[in-house]
Length: 120
Image 1 (tube, rainbow, N blue to C red):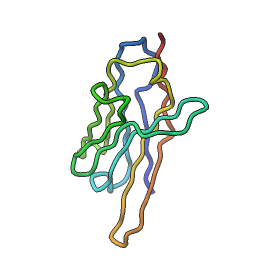
Image 2 (image 1 turned 45 degrees about the vertical axis):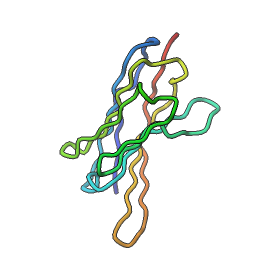
Image 3 (image 1 turned 90 degrees about the vertical axis):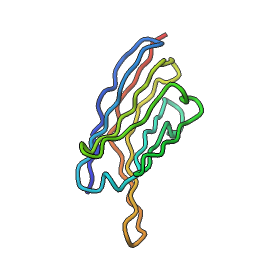
Image 4 (image 1 turned 180 degrees about the vertical axis):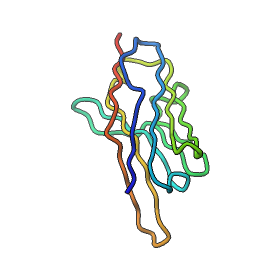
């Protein structure tokens, strides 16, 4: 079983920055693809950014050039650096871990979420 614990959310003014962290338990982190998702009130959860175990990253168009995802396999932690924040970035941000074992079975874990609020 894997547990994901997010931290770093909070209230920030428009144009400000925050860095989210997600620490994973267990030993599969370095083999897993990691992602950050967000869900605003009344909206579906959406992918913000993800990073493969090899370090390749992908971003939603709405955050390209402003957000950076990174990982530290030695610390079992994935980060999301968010710059130039906008009110529309306000949401609960969730960390996700995806891992496929040698049998092909997919494991999908979520953190509890951390609130990010950007005031105008």
